[in-house]
Length: 217
Image 1: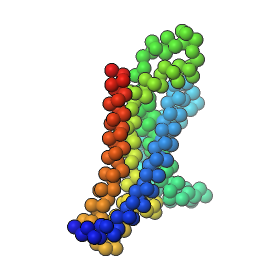
Image 2: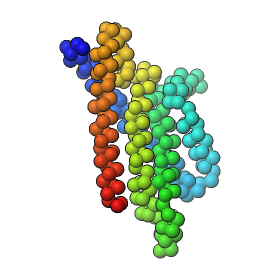
Image 3: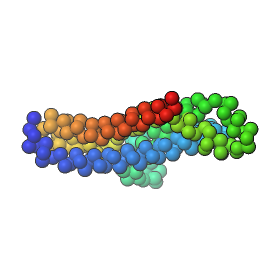
Image 4: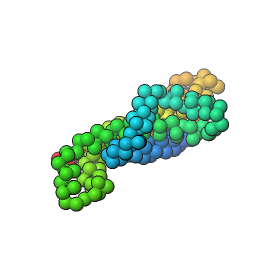
């Protein structure tokens, strides 16, 4: 293991890690928004939207992110819709993550007892007030472990975005291996970089889950 080589090239991984974090943050935030929208439409029984939501979830969950990115980056320009590699990556992550978040939120909302919703209605709360004050806090606590798993999943999925010409961590590792044939060093820096990003987030989410579980207990 050539640590002088690692010292020389690790700044490239730092820059790539920052790009990865930006992609992941935007993709995760958008996926949570999409998931919340799908769950709200189901809760309020927006009939015209339900078939589209079901179709979106099935399409998103049953196609790989790799294929989705290929479609966004290479197919859409054929019909006049062009996006940068960064935008394609964010849209792809949000499209994939939104369906998983929607299912996580759905399970959380379904865990809330019907009697609590009826109790809210009996004291004059509107459906929106019941959603905000009664259902959402309990649903969030139940769905948090699944949402946390989705966040980690999306962070890992950023390893695919190099196919749309983004200089992420995997792109940099492959570039260094191709130019210098320093495979061990490049892969070592890649593993350390992903650990530095994912491990603190995973530990933070685990701490949050335990804290909420203690509060509920």
